[in-house]
Image (cartoon, rainbow, N blue to C red; front, top):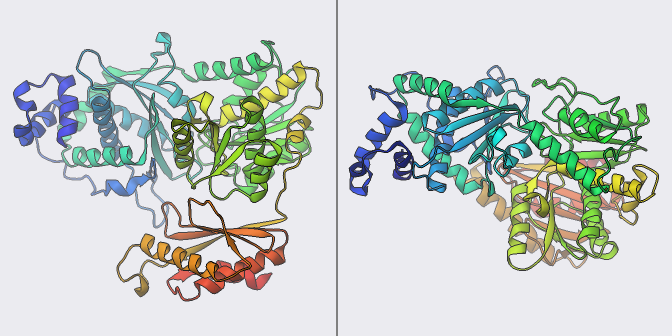
Amino acid sequence: MDCHSFHAIAQLRKIPEQFCKPKNCSLQRSVLDSHYQAAPSTAAVPNLDKVDFLKLQNGSDIRGVAVAGVEGEPLNLTEPVSEAIAAGFAAWLLEKKKADGSRRLSISVGHDSRISAKKLEDAISRGIAGAGLDVVQYGLASTPAMFNSTVTEDDAFLCPVDGSIMITASHLPYNRNGFKFFTNAGGLGKADIKNILERAADIYNKFTAEGLTSSKGKAVASVKRVDYMNVYTSDLVKAVRKAAGNIEKPLEGFHIVVDAGNGAGGFFAAKVLEPLGAVTSGSQFLEPDGMFPNHIPNPEDKTAMKAITQAVLDNKADLGIIFDTDVDRSAAVDSTGLEFNRNRLIALMSAIVLEEHPGTTIVTDSVTSDGLTTFIEKKLGGKHHRFKRGYKNVIDEAIRLNSVGEESHLAIETSGHGALKENHWLDDGAYLMVKILNKIASARASGQTGGSKVLTGLLEGLQEPAFSVELRLKINQSHQDLKGGSFRDYGEAVLKHLENYIDSDPKLQKAPVNYEGVRVSGYGGWFLLRLSLHDPVLPLNIEAPSNNDAVLLGNVVRAALKEFSALDTSALDKFVQAS
């Protein structure tokens, strides 16, 4: 354990001052081991697998394999690993909060419907308790609710907590799991996650059998359970009532179906929509099932969107709402089956937000369409700031713009991650849907009729591409062209070459402002080639007025990249040749 971790926990544990001086760092570690693990023996646990903790980082999240049985995917998110990560977060939190021992800090723990959730919840609880902090377990919960527990003030529900951990791997397969971390300042960033994993690796390597047994006893003594989701959902209900002029049941007469994909979002039907008066019959896959037997809980997935669309049409509903596994993403469908996702969801939310905050800047990720820019700026009178992929990148950019005097109230990715300034810049799929419900409810309160047509009407004038495609060009990391270098360096070289190639073609024009990859307009459309945030892949997005125009753009990229033999362009070749 590093000195920072020692000092933070030492303060809470009242370790004698002489052990807290820098010159005694090696002594500090052994003293902390005994206090943290309460272990009379310092013999390492012999049967713990070696784990590269830093490989568990996935941007601002932690992700790993928590269930055995899938070929080629060995376990790396075990219970001891999870316990060490929790202890690392506790040490990080103690340091950030400058804990002085005057009170015990507390951390809330929740999870989605994954089959590995309970065992990881228990392991996380042991890690927190072993570090001397209190644990508040929420059981099945949404990611946004976990953040909210750090800002809610309610003694009856042991809030606010000092930190929060959500156990989730979003829409990934059943065998995966992971963690997201929060304080009242928001979600942790990449640097924080790396710091926690480094601490966790050190803690893991010093685990003793006695210490692991001791942490179980401490968890029994310090774990409390509360139903925090009742607090979170009641706040959502209050928000809709307020928008409708404090009407008790502003959605009475509306038929709204929910598809939770067997994730954690099933609460929305009974605990949000029904108290507001909506009929929710026909809602589907509300029961938690970590095997996800019906479809991937992902608003970007075509099968998932087809399922909610069919449910709306079959039930003649006014609106359909779909969530991802942990409810930080969402999408909707109107009464005719029109999907509000990707560019349409951004356009809809932009229309709602710009009514409330005229002229504000809308921050999106890099793959949004040119038609969306025209809609936001020409039709709505706002400003479109197209930034990088990654929901945390988009949110952080909106926060940055506000800090330098450029007002921004919405940060939203095409994936369905949407965050509002009014909601602590939290990407909250349920709150995003509440904003849509607010629009319907307030329209009815003012005498308008038509249900979801109110929403569809907000999209009037949005130009949508006739053809769009995303192709993934993989970098072969074992190819000799990489010469032992990183795939990132190779990918950057590809992008630089493409940029120079474009400069020589008068029919093509680079985007004047661009923050990620190479974005080029031509043949009535555009393409963006960028380097994936985490993987050895160059995703290529093309949008055009027709398939033929898209092929022309594809051929431009294909010709520019032909000399990069470590780049697998088979997906692009197939698209061009088949069209």
